[in-house]
Length: 281
Image 1 (spheres, rainbow, N blue to C red):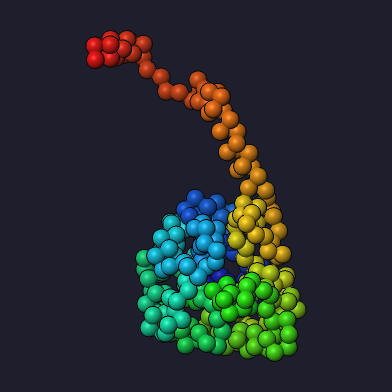
Image 2: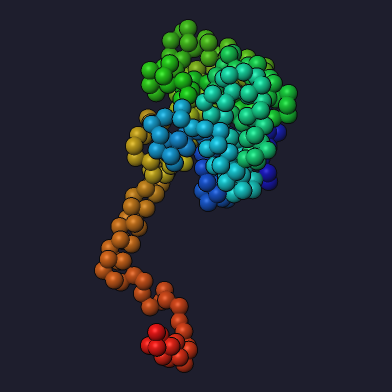
C-alpha cells in the first residue's frame, strides 16, 4: 500500500511506529521499498555518502533532483521525501516555493524537507500553501554546522530546549506534516512528540519519537568515515562488499574468472569459417 502524508498521521494517531531510511539511487530505493520501509528520505547526506563532500553545504539543487528522480523511479510504496539543499530556501519565500516545486516536478518527490524552526516558518507556510507537503527538521541541522561549530547534540540546556519545543509547535502551525528531531536528549524528544499532533521522526533522539530515520549506509556498516553514537549496524554489508571485491580481484588476476560456465558458445562450423576468414586478414 502506498504510504502518504495521511498514512503518517494515521500511524501517529494509532501509536504505530514509522520507519524511514535514506536512499540516493534506484537500486537501493527498490530494496528499501521492498523491505516495507514507510518512507525514503533522499537526504542531502548524499554529499557525504555518495559525493565525498566533507559536509552537506556543497550539495546543489541539481544533485538533489538527479538523485531524487532515481529514487522516485525505484520507490513503489514508500513515501519519497527530498531534502532542500543549503541556500535553496534560506534566501526567501519565493526561492523556497520555486525550488520545492522543482523537487516535486523534476525529481517526482512526494514531499520536501527543510531545516530550521521559527525562522523558516514563512517558507513552510508558503510551500504547503502551494500544495507541497513539508517535513521540518530541528535539533542538529547539518546545514548549520558552521554556526554550531561542528556536529554537536542540541537542546541540552534549558534555554535551547525551550526553543526547540517552541520551534516544533511553530513548524506544526506553519503546516509541516512531520518533523525530524536530530541529536537531542531522549526526554526532550519524547516531550515534543507528546506535545505535537503531527509525527516526529527521530535520529539520535531516542525511542520516544513516533518514528526513526537512519542513513542506510551507516546502518549497513558501509560508510566507515564516521559513525555517530546513535547508529546501530543492522548488517555488516561493508565487510561483505570488501570481501567480494577482493575475491573478484584475486580470481581475475589468477585467471580463474571467468570460468567455462560464464562463457557464451559458438557452433563449431561457424567458428571454423570465422577462423578461416580471420586467417586471410
